[in-house]
Length: 141
Image (cartoon, rainbow, N blue to C red; front, side, top):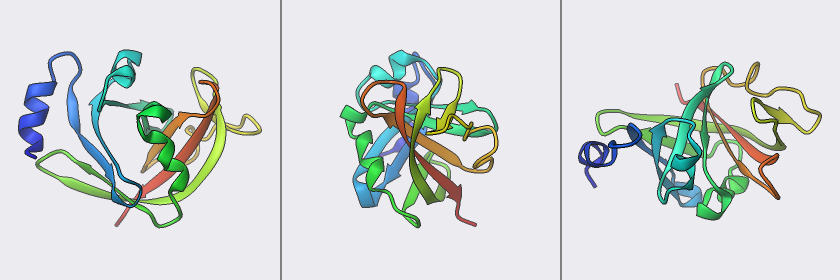
């Protein structure tokens, strides 16, 4: 599929940045430059936005994002814009919380303000929006 053409055709409400793929766990989803709930609610659509010092990607567990639980240290993820493909490598996966303005570990310590400033942090709900699974990915240098 031509990602540039897809970006042009799907960027009417939110700006599509490209596609996030994690081949080892069969995740492949369009990412949009927004934190709007409507974006996350749409099919084949994840939110990509800055939170704290890092960029996060959020999507519903029932849209396939629950599979981030199967990421392991070393699992590769890719953001492909059509012009550029950047590879990221998983460093860890944890359970934590969404406070509405922050993602935290299980002890409510912020994980986006100090952790993973150069990478992308993926998260999805587990048993309600306040409990989340968080996967950290650093750029592969």
